[in-house]
Amino acid sequence: MCDLHDQYEHEHGDGTLFPGAAGLGPRRIMQLLGAAGVVGGVTGGADPAMAAAAEGVLDTDGGYRPPTGPAENSPAKATALGWIDDQASAITGLNDEIWEHAELSLREWKSSLAAAEFLERAGFEVSFGTAGFPTAFTATFRQGYGGPALGFSGEYDALPGLSQRKGVGHHDPREYIHDPFAPGYGPGHGCGHSALGSAAAAAAAAVAEAARAHRLPVTVKFFGSTAEEQLIGKTYAVSKGVYDGLDAFLDRHPSTSNATGWGTSTAMTAVTFTFLGVAGHGGTPLGNKSALDAAVDEFARRTQGVRWKTALPDGYEPPMYEPPAWFLERTGQSWPPENITWPPKRVVSQEEFSSLGPELAPQE
Image (cartoon, rainbow, N blue to C red; front, side, top):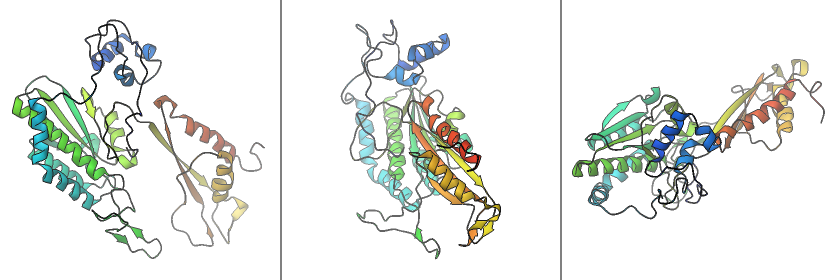
């Protein structure tokens, strides 16, 4: 979620999914297609949600066309916007509190509790432990029966080394790490998740207030997601069916401009390779089996153009000591999701050459 949003990022061409689509919502259409076992055929392997909701995909003569421009004014919309104005200090206060906590992934104890308490005061029922994570929660508001089920995505984890005082336009860390071997700064919200989670919680609460005031049937769910920066929270939430049953899922990210859009971000995967050698002293490991040589000289040389995240020894080692193990981590992004396997496949095939050793590896 760290990429800034571009309103032109998810433009799609026109096309017709199938005749007779007029009057059916995208979700219902995909349900019917899935029941018929033809989703893969009509979408060509593309994301079915994208295929159903892409602009123009349901256009037929006299059929559905997506609305353009801002949502029409209504008493409910006025109530929601009025509630946000009235609660401005509480909303910005939540952002400030999460900013000050600056808790890393999977450790957002105070931040998640602050967001949950904000929503409880707005009339939501809160349940912690979503998808098995203690700092993830689901807050639910229900008004009447039927109506749409709306989901709001919230995050609140910080990043290491980015500590910063609020309201200061230059580098001014709040927290220093006084380690003589590795001095640095404490965690901070360099990706803006303090604002992300606070605004999403406020939006969910505003919708709930409008529904309550105007007796509109709706279910509103806010998902407090842990460890977004580690690609963990939402991954397990999807696998556990946390988002099942939603009619719409609204997400946002702080950016330099205001824009809206429908789309899917790139899929991501990660792989870690461990290179095992023999420990030694004086820079010459016993038997000349160097984990460092395998990791850097062989592996990196044979994977030109592949971006590596880290190359780390197995723990702290003395300067004249050759460690027995080194690690390389690789992350890859791709769209569509089915292509996400190609970076690891490319790397693994090269790594298999390196594992043979210099004397057995194929010559270029």
